[in-house]
Image (cartoon, rainbow, N blue to C red; front, side, top):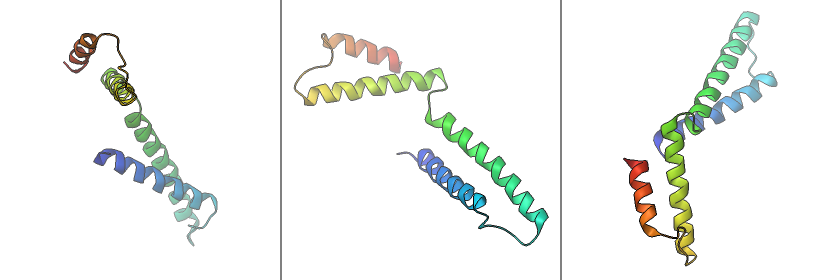
Length: 103
């Protein structure tokens, strides 16, 4: 896992915990204005983090969708090679498709 994925995962977990604490009023302060500011900031931060995690962990760009397709193809090839069969009927097609996807 790369650094960005680890960071987004940690932020998503922290945001979920903060939301749970916010819902149970455990993180209540003595000042009503401070409580309101904390709740508003938490909600905004929650939306921002969820949007970033969703955007970066899914295929919202053509390049990301293409890369996911190449990754899935290679995983399928590896799985079939392990099972003693080859995923494609003609090995040359695989090389051409890989070169087109990468290049």
